[in-house]
Image (cartoon, rainbow, N blue to C red; front, side, top):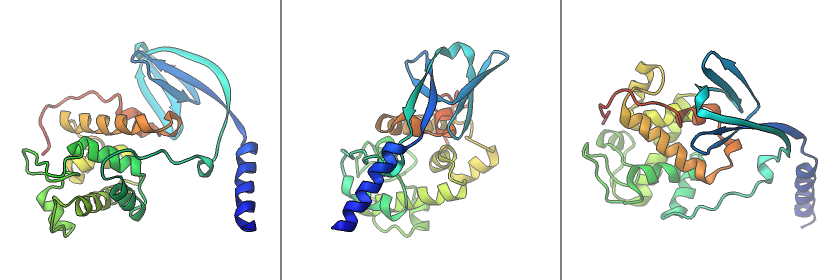
Length: 235
């Protein structure tokens, strides 16, 4: 008990002494406020520096840069975990823990893929909560794709594989989940499929609603501003 109290006290002390950091916010036309560490103008483009990289967008899309303010950088270990108020929450948490994923990310994929319908079937025969293609189910040794536990476990395992394949880049992993890793590799990024680009946008928007916007990396933020070029669906 004494050890637990010491650990709790140490965590509290770290939170209190966490260094302050300066922040600015770019306010977009749609009302989104992006936390930025700086910005610069490149012709008619505004380059916003965000945690993890930078995002380029037309300057006209940014209404204003809000004045700098000071906030405390709180360590992740001191932040309470966001509640997971969705169907199959226990199965999602179990799979996320097993494959070292954010449960909110898994929930966002399930919501986008099937809207939590375990019997969902797409026009291309993707099946279940995480819409596993028959070939993917076969590769993952899935025997019952409509079983919620087996489907969520397999879909999460596949998502973990894609994140590892694309060096943790969430945008590319999501694009590969929708279009297939071969198409992402061939395109050198998110393929120019309207379905895939909309898919990445929808998943990241769902995730953004459950997260502090400071936690989103450059690749995830960039996915919100991708313009579709090709209407051909990948699957």
